[in-house]
Length: 607
Image 1 (tube, rainbow, N blue to C red):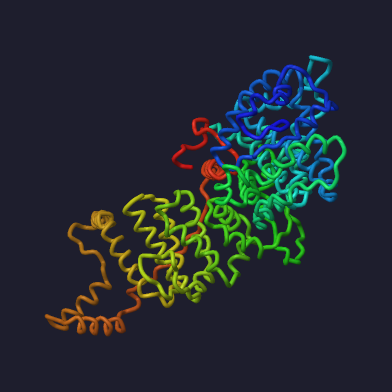
Image 2 (cartoon, helix red, strand yellow; image 1 turned 45 degrees about the horizontal axis):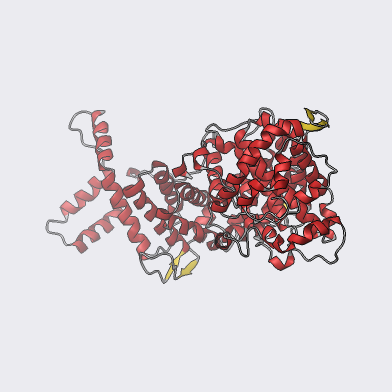
């Protein structure tokens, strides 16, 4: 960073950066700032490059922490960025790429410094870094005239919701989303769930509150649009020479493409970029999940969770007598399509779970679709490859199935959808099978895997609950599915024989010794078979049983209630979901690195 800097190894010797973090105050109208933010730098997109950048920034940030109380230069940098955000919308309309580029660079610097500040400082100390301002040469004091921290948060939200997503704005929008993620990343460094912190207050009940629905809607649309990084040729094409800014930037214009394509052409991050070509979509989804799982404050609910709970379809023209807080409308068809296409990622599966569980409008819409196979098949594939998935991803996929099987219409319709040649199901060639039969096969396979390998009670219970929910609607089962059901019953009966014996002994204990248990059905057929003689063939036994079934006294039978199970979140769900969400950020956020030794929120083998 800083003029003409292109690699992380150059940062510690960069004269502009040395001046920024040094002991001298720099006024906001000093030409230094234009030079500082007119740099070329390959923004990292993979963990290795992010680690190199962080290691290079740490000594600079630590020097800044020591000197900023006297210089106020960090606050000046933030105000330089804020001054440019006010013109971003006009710059976008005028296609002023140079102005957007400099605003991006200023925010990139702020984000890199913030990440180290958050690691080194308490939240109160972080806030103080925003409060220091130059008062006189070499003297700096705190000021209460403005809350620069809240102003930055508000401007980041404004930037995300107001600046249109174009090739020339892609990079700064990505940087704004990433910076908000960094603001909340303090949670990673604490074992306990953080509640009611200053940043959470600003984002949940401060001036940002009125932008809640727009932010959630924009993040969802970023996920829906799945926009790839723009091609380098669209990034910087100055139309005319002249002017101070162009003069400063013209010498480094060839490197701008690297900044705006997030480590694209010619960088070591190129391979990772191919694996994750949708950094803005990915980062937006992660930020949305972080916001949705913030804990409620002492006297206010999480507005982002409220927005996710109540948004409606754009096709829904009905009017509500009372509008829920932070509601908005979004295209359900587009959202459904994106959810179907992206289930290979943990975060998309978690979003699907969140919407099914919390948003009744979205759940009703999903269950009304006639192409449910597009959604269910990716979920089944997650469960089929249970050995390769982390346990949280498997849980979410299974709970999604459990929620779907609570609906009888779903349980009926899945047996009417015929599938051909399921390539990922390799245990047996299935040239044609119903979606319902395939679902049964995959759930049973998950049960058997769990019984022989992981022995997870939670997984076992939810698998059986899903099967029980579907059982009353079993229709036209594939022969292989029917065989697997019988095999499962046999396996379960063997596994649970000891439990059955204990229950039987317990029942006998409550009766007189040697009293026979009242097996009326069993006794009725045994008597019939004895009367039919000995040495009966299989065919003769079947005939006796079939005739006996017609004569069986109905008053002796007891009808079992239909088995129905409903998913209910456990108490204090944040204890599960907040560590899970942050494990996704840790593993999947583009261009961010945290040392494994710093992580306190979850054990590294659970991420």
